[in-house]
Image 1 (tube, rainbow, N blue to C red):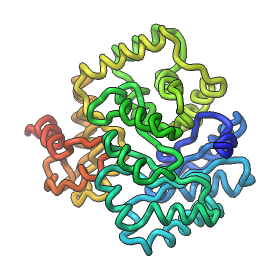
Image 2 (cartoon, rainbow, N blue to C red; image 1 turned 180 degrees about the vertical axis):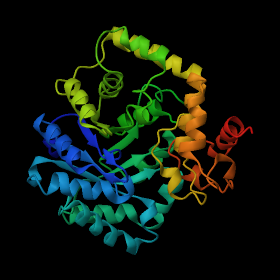
Image 3 (cartoon, helix red, strand yellow; image 1 turned 180 degrees about the horizontal axis):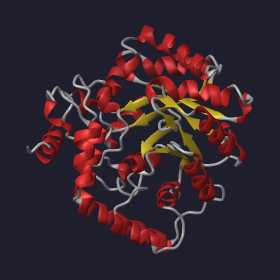
Length: 372
């Protein structure tokens, strides 16, 4: 745990949703964000090869690692199942990640998106053993996992591999007691095994920032910070939270997050009551709990923009206006890529960290937007 003290604060820069100019990362703005983050005393950066189709790693090389000495930052990368098929593939892929990021070692290397199926695959390829070997060689300082499954699966993984040092979990006030995500139960397993926790999706892919009007009114009545501030502080306030990541995509978001995390204070009693009220409002909306991670789109044979279609479905549910129909028909779909074009292969559901019944939901989307 002594090395973990080099992490200056419990707030990290998640690099899955960097600012974009069309299909490319907005490098000038990302440099500004990196500078602001480091200047404020933070130093933890999180990436993965699949983020922005590989552009997250190379953007960090251009904006961070080529501009600052290695001791100024903590860098986490991940081993993702999409990029290897057998044990022999892992080391070459790992070396390509080091090169893409422009570093000689990773501070943390996580077995990515672990769940029952992925865990079996990683075991069959000796992925954990390879990661521990890389640690022994000094190319990785710490080995951990990012996790998306039931608490009992996490318990199995931590029992079989007690060498795991950190666990990254999805944790926010909407998912806290959601039976599909089990944030609370998964967190409790981390505490049971004394594993420091890294929080991902504290604002649930932006859903806890762009709130429904009635939920926003509850937080506005506090006359305090932004909706993001309450969500991130909620997650950071639990014992054992080593790091809370935020996938910031603009300098404005960066500055807002710095404003309340630089001198972090947990939610007080009044703020927690308001958050609980917002949680109940979300439950009453019956919205699709998609975080727009886009893992589902990578393998879709019909190239359906599933998260975008779920977002317009939620918009229709909230506002009941014509805008959602316009975005569905004009912006997010084209011939062959509508919800009704789904061939029900199931690849999306295997990749979904939220375990959503995507095929069923696409049928509902088609019924709503393709009536004519």
